[in-house]
Image: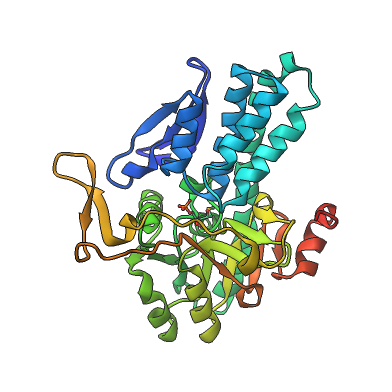
Length: 366
Ligand code: MRU
């Protein structure tokens, strides 16, 4: 998508320097900074410190990390070591494991002297595929928005609520939840987006920055406002992203998503999840029981983060000294609260049968 009139992806390969370039998202929306990533430690740090974030982008970054590993040492032992090293960077988004497994499965059968080139080619493929998947999600999501528009007066605005940032910054391009919004806006359908702030990391500010840059009308709201807006008929539909969705359609996403799903259910507001297939964990069914939830630093809750007068990123405490903070970063929305899953192949009910019919090639994965 465009930043200051120039088209950017959230990561890109610099073939002159042979390094990956990323947007350091910690500085957004205040400052647009890019950074080169050229060592194993820099790759791990980029994911752990959330310079890059969002399930699909974490996956694509991990693929480039494996390409670097194969350049350093293409042996089986180093491949396994790199897989383990990067797999431990963040626990919840399954795209990380998906990308690492895809690289490992493709590279292990190859002779060692072919692995570095093959790994880089594969990383490019994974990045390009992500863009295409998200464009397709946008087209299928657009049909949902068009369906809602039919029941409105001509020109009447459609209000969409979203949580966290499932935008182009969280993917390679387009975003997942935002892709239908961009497609609708580009098609001339009047939309307005309620953007949850998404404490404690305030990913809603990233979503606002994205939507604003693209000219999509939006309003930044506190996390607890959604239920009130739904009660008053001010939300036509909810679209969120996901970090891991189980084979029966339980949806893990940023903390607070579950509460939005409950409020949507209670108010008959359609609740859709934009789901690229690499985010499906076919190995598990029960999301509440089996998805590992990242527990982040308590300081993210007891303090608020921002840019300090000296230009550094700093934290300001909002609680009494010594107050313990708890910070689960994700939650699980059970499938019965989900109206539909918007995948790259189309929209399916959030059920085992629906997902298997959409992706029959995975029906037997356990
Ligand atoms: O902790 P984050 O910022 O990596 O969490 C991101 C989310 O929860 C997104 O909603 C999810 O990854 C979907 S991104 C298309």
